[in-house]
Length: 120
Image (cartoon, one colour):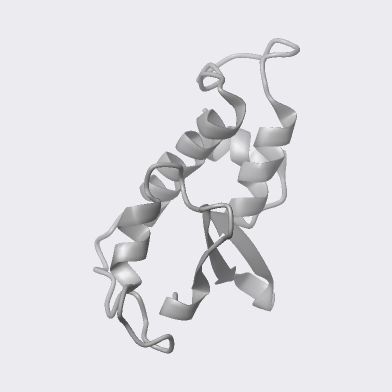
C-alpha cells in the first residue's frame, strides 16, 4: 500500500515514509541512514499515485525485515549495542528514547513489544 507520494525527502536530507497503519493511523517512518539514495531511486521519475511495489511475494518474511529494521534504527539512534537476548535487563543498559522512537516507527507505541520481539 506504499505509494510513491508517501516517500518524502526532508530539507535536511533525511528520507521519511508516510505509512497508514491499522485503524487508519498515519505515522512517519525514518529511512535508515545510508539507505536514502536506495529508497529515493525506487521512486525517481515515477507517478505519485503509483504503488512502490506492485506485488509482495506471499512467502516473504515481513516480520524478519521489521526486526532487522528495528535493530538498525535502535543502533542508529542510540549508538548502543542490542540488549542481551535473555535474562533481566540491567538498569541503564537501554536508551529509552531510542526504544520509544523504534516503537513509534513500527506502529506499536509499546516498549514491551519492541523489547520482546524486535530488539532481543
